[in-house]
Length: 478
Image (cartoon, rainbow, N blue to C red; front, top):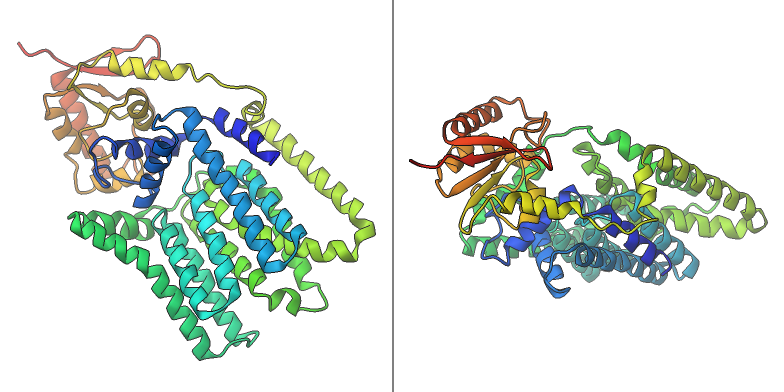
């Protein structure tokens, strides 16, 4: 419980975060007569509904306090779920406590201080671990349903199912605890359970006449079209090296025990290990720190189970282990202070976010009721604070938008031809669009060229004196 107020302060002072602004804009739009897929999503549909309902329950005002409160509730949910599940499965309060503690500490380093879908996904996967570890047929169906719900938050949940499948293969052919027929039944049940929420989602969007958008943005794009990159690899290593070291040491120590069955025939240990390893598959696409978090609670189980075993054997030598962990903790803090000093400041201040009023006023003082704006530069930021929505089907110009522009190179041109659009925010960044990986593709170049032509034809530009950004105003008709 001591970590909760510290995490709350840390999360609050972290601000909304880049990704969360898109979640908040789309989530809020659902209160304003928009529907899912009116704007291109970066995550699966239930995540935006979760954000909408969560903030509405907490008061409906998309403020820093309410967003932080939702994040803290997720944080508490991770801790409680980890403790209850591991305690039930291992009958060890020590193992459960260490698992929960590591899962919560990881939140500080893996961007769960921001609003990210990995938090509810982790909670659902932890409870799935509980049912799968009981290893009864009906429990595999329930575990599959939980992972299917997680899939409707973000497609990364698919990798947990792959981990569960590999465990069944391992159980049958390596430790021979089950027959081929038994694992076939369990495998079928988890797949059927996993399919239930997905099929219900498909039916729902079919009835809304949005099935094509749902299939594309939930399945085809994440697994087939999302481009791989290494933009955040260095940052990921710096933030998670301590956890990676603990995980590797624990796995090596598990190999060293005399009674191999203690770990390698233990369903809780092995499912956690496979969940952790397979959930890292998403890092092949992107190395944003929150992509690592789906593995964290399960490697925490591995670390905690190994520690609980060796702490009994080497009880008198624990001081050395604690000394090593203290040294590792100090090293992490020193590296964090050197590389990200502003992160430490989040624990020492309470930010007033005064600049956000300037974001809002910069846009809204240039618009009247009924006027529209196309905010390309830092679009999510300005749409959120100005409480505006674009007349194009995207909030930012990230990778999903680049994919959309492949077949819609005239989208900016058509947007500016709408005479109710009075303001455009564009042209004060070197990167031109958010997606630095696709800025020079032929389609994006064509779309941007058409945008510039339309701006030069029907708009005049001024530089805002406060934020030093370019604002394009529609020329007054004569």
